[in-house]
Image (cartoon, rainbow, N blue to C red):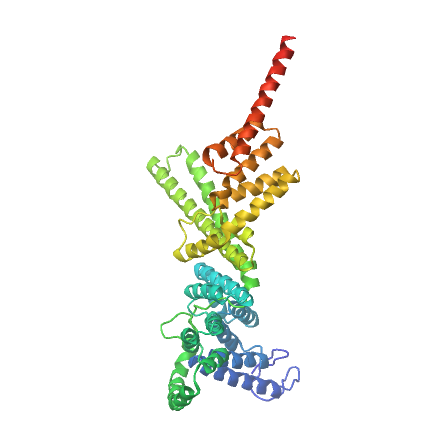
Length: 473
């Protein structure tokens, strides 16, 4: 055995021959830690992930050097979507035992699967947005986000639980039941799901199902014991057909880690890839083949391939930005910030977005554009009357982009003409006034627009006469 203090290895005895440390307590704690690990392994094997976490956390608390318990704890965390906790355990395991490469292999697999991380990040973003909606008592909006989060990560336990709670809060216990059952399939003894199930299940149904549950408990235990030995070897591989722990978890309670590290890094890498590809393309286009190392056809083919790669990465980054803005606008809508939500999405091209994202965009547009346009019109008039022409012009132009009611479109254009007139931009002002007359003759400002044109034309004519007179003198 190895002395935990000095590291001296000896064959027998409870006292280290080198430093004299009594290792009886150390041996006891190691035995307790191993026993807790075995219990955690049994729970994981029977899909009791909550029980597995409890036992494995105690195991590493008793003996922090129990790296096999840490590795398994990381796997269970990942299965439940707690990727930050999983990475923490694997990093600690790698540092505590340099010879054990298991944790390093797990982390390497995660780093190589950037697409899965991106999807889990999207799931987390939607989950956090749903929590905000729940705080605002907007269960219907929260449920939309949770369904999308689950589509990105089918083992997002907390998303299923919150979706069940949304339905229960709306009085729809029937719709909540499938979410609860899915949680109990993923985590057999999840306390939150069990509590929800108890709340929505009639007492008579609970009583009748109790006997069946007791009957199957022994069968489950026997099956678990048969699988336990084989599982010790299986848990060294993350992805397998019948493995208990698989890598498809979500990102729960890891917003700081992902948004500060993973997601910005992926976007930065994409932008760097775009720049690298652009540089390569410029180099190829300036290459004249003087050394004979490449034919003209090869260069043309490479150019086309590089252009295609550049467009692909640019489109990917732009799409992610658009989807993010639509989600932000959705949150602003829930907070009653109609103008901010409308302005955020007014220039978005939705042609390459998914049906679900387009549906969200349409909801924001329908519920915000009319109100936002009215607010911007009032805001623009206020700025104009106070002499703040720049802000007035910005507000009125934004109003034109959002306006859905033509009853006052002519008024908006008329005030843009007044702003141009106030700046001394006579030609621009006349073009605005003429537009009111031609396109919105029924507008309440059509007559004023005609009078303004007559006044400006008269002023221009008078100025020209004065100039001519001065020239003649």
